[in-house]
Length: 273
Image 1: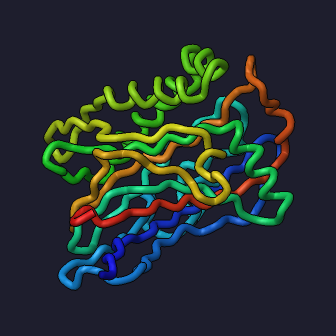
Image 2: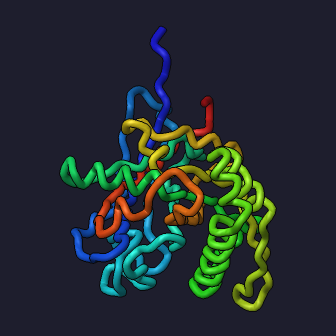
């Protein structure tokens, strides 16, 4: 008997990371796409749409200057720089979905991909699912405040002394420190005159290079990250450029580089899976 294959979908987003001394480079676009891998349940569909919270248009998640591509330009990246973007992923289908895989793919020529992976060794990625009680929808102002608060959280955690000491011993130890602190974090924000408490339902923390893993990416392993049908998930993406003090890598080795990664998130149906 033929086994029914899972219904899965990929949500693509591109991130342009510009670091050290020079700017420039071509912006990559994030899009969303769906693919059906075989026999599926006729009664259900899984479909995702994505956009950043600042402007609902296609464009890079990270960019140097404010422009039509979006606001909150990062400027040129330097060690200890940490930037957070909110990605809103809406499940427009009829089946609940779960995040199963995270992938970061280096783009460009062979030399550019090599530079991207070198940067990936020196960068930490945090992907946190932000949740509200009962799935309350936040207005644009509240969403921006939450994103700013999450950004400050990640900056303080990843650039703090405890993380640096742990990273010198073991990457997994350092990543666990950030994840546990993020899961304990709550933030109260005014939303249409009511105070709403925002928390992190689940989070992935790891090396940007590990998300490449030869193109295979990483198992998200986030059991609490479920996107119900007709609901929108608020994912906070943070990338932090680690200072090399006391560590094995050398920030100067990637000075002046322009690197480009595409993030891919794979969701699968929850039902019968």
